[in-house]
Length: 196
Ligand code: HEC
Image (cartoon, rainbow, N blue to C red; front, top):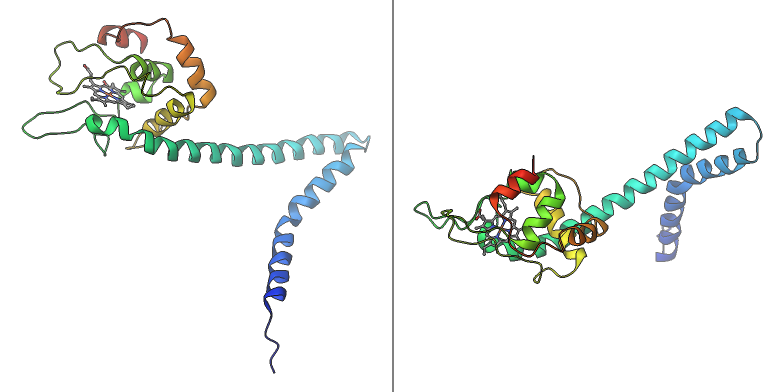
């Protein structure tokens, strides 16, 4: 009978394939380790070079993971913005020129200085004779944790055609502390001034 591979032998093949994939990395690390003990200057330069490549590769993997996690949590958190800003980020249009809120897509405040975006979200905007049916209320009580603040900020800054940077949990903590003393909702005039 033909030699049908059992589950076990299939697994071994898979393991071999996995081991082969790791091979270049292992060789690279081994040569880096070897050259650390080598007093030769060129070798030491090579080591630093290799170490830089390795750590930046690992860092960018970790960074991509962070962004993906923030984006997926942010998508859920955006549910609390959607009723006014719309599922497409263009501002919910009730027809007949009746808009709930302005667009998130292409907004200066979403794509600009992230600390100003945090201020808008946490403290809201004073209603001063706009035609929007909705109101940008302070959301600090609705978003009490910095992970959630970071994720919703990252989501709006990287959705609907926006391509601004990631906001980490650490950034969010910093912004919350920065604006803690601010009691009232922010005026449009102050927002403009902060975004200069
Ligand atoms: C109840 C409706 C409502 C909800 C919910 C809401 N907003 Fe708003 N938002 C508004 C309105 C209305 C304005 C315009 C305020 C004004 O100019 O008076 C606004 C303005 C903004 C602006 C400024 C946009 C610009 O370019 O002028 C940003 C940024 C923003 N909102 C982000 C958010 C985010 C993020 C959330 C969810 C965490 C959210 N909003 C939830 C109604 C809402």
